[in-house]
Image 1 (cartoon, one colour):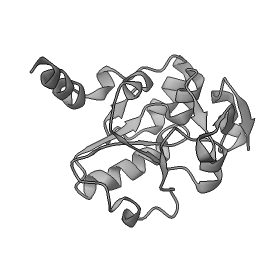
Image 2 (cartoon, rainbow, N blue to C red):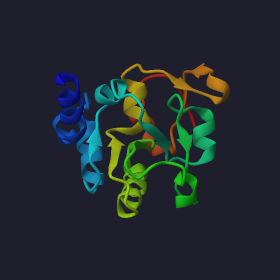
Image 3 (cartoon, rainbow, N blue to C red):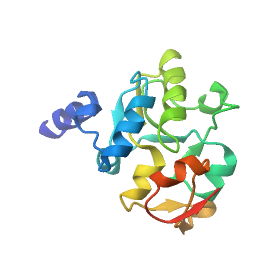
Length: 164
């Protein structure tokens, strides 16, 4: 019973209470870009979350360089709800992008379409990587390479090999 209450509390307490970014300049920058319409989940909270669908909202070129383990690439420019048709509307979904801006927009679409438990990874794959968590290429091969999206975003990646 206690375990169910703990899981319920974890999933339904607003994630901004848990969401932390270590680099305060990075935090200020992304907070100014977010609409704050999709609940946030921190890197630490995601590491303890089991059974969630991970949706990478970056473009395929970025995804191929590296992504979170077991993530599904849904893209941004060509995103289509048919890419998530097989996911139950009451499943837990975590969307992420480079910093979380594109993923927030996809998260908004999912919420509008009736998905009930959608969270945006606070700081995106950059924060995940900066905190020393593993990223993967195709076929589950771990890598240190990370696509920086554009040269202006490179300064926010503090670990690994930057690929543009």
